[in-house]
Image (spheres, rainbow, N blue to C red):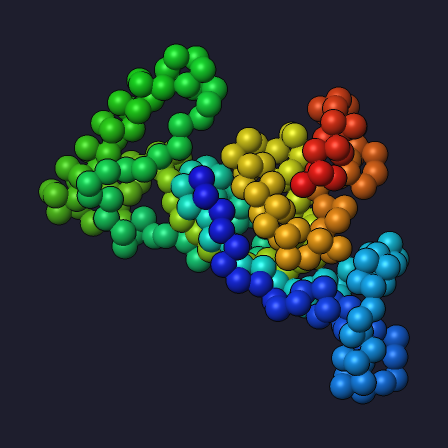
Length: 228
């Protein structure tokens, strides 16, 4: 699995600060641009975030390219509806030479990795047989497994990213999407360290929200994400 930050709003924290200033000022936008020049984003945006004025975060967007994730993981990812997605099509892309797939570590640890790989290869062989027999690719793809790897481009604004991280960086999230979310957080935090200072699962900024389903390791998880 590989996650790349393809693009992002230039000077995202300046953009968010400008939007926040606008809400409370009668100055022109040109004048506000001068006012935000040189201000402490950590102090100003920290106050804005503490107040819960999160709508201004929607002006900063981040575009990620994700490769080598399974269809099982991508189906979880696209459930986050306040985002934009472009995904490799199994209808138009013919998987001729090989079928890239994701092998769960639990299967490997159980000593079933080779058998898993053989089953996927068998399914892929039948997929090619279907296509070679004249079955449309859009119908042949029905046999492909959830393990089949895909590629996807994702665009989220900073507000949705904070929500996404709170759910998908949690230890209770499925392992693959948790790994994707954590890598996205690392990349986003490099470009907007103030906005994403407290980002991560719910336990980073408060008590664990999972109740009886908690992983039981909130202090460890807090240290992990505060050090990202």
